[in-house]
Image (tube, rainbow, N blue to C red; front, side, top):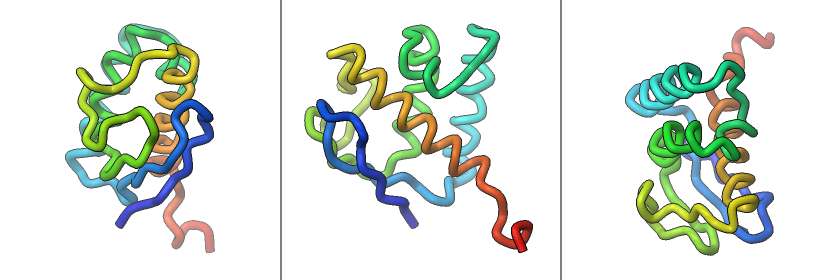
Length: 116
């Protein structure tokens, strides 16, 4: 299953298909990246992931692994770390921060059973 998300970044308009639920390999890639990024910076947030170049470098591979399909203007159909746009920096940062926030929301979402 996927969750279709619309980019809030004008420069990078379009949609992505986020795995939902994440597979165990996707979750482990994300968890390891968060751990590695946390070792670089004391406070890790979606904003930090998008705008701190050191953290972005660690987190981007995990973000790419969690997105099943890309339909974003200016982003290749199957982006890699080498082909993902880094500029304009503010717009690219907003795109990465938004994706990190969406992935974090999928991970932290409560089980439906617990809500009842």
